[in-house]
Length: 105
Image 1: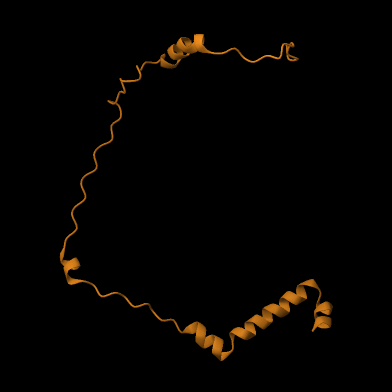
Image 2: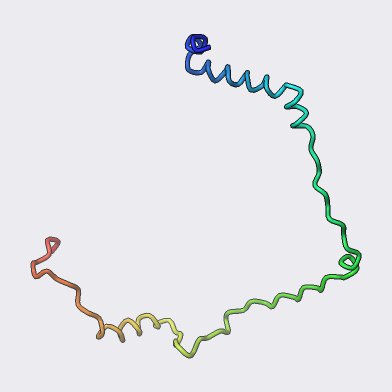
């Protein structure tokens, strides 16, 4: 077997294996095993469950976020970020420095 595989080359061994696998699927035992499919047993339906009608789903409320304002924490205007930035500037720490001048300056 090994010498025949060496004569066929690298892909020849795959061809032999592929042909062997087709032959094994054609045997009656394997074919009978593969073709017999049993359907799973379905549970018996309850008569009470079929008679109950599901409750209708409530209508979804329309989504409107234009009226929401979180006035407890924020005051909204177009300069809100700038106002907070200026207000917090006095609490900022300076950038760390090694004491040497920067090579980019």
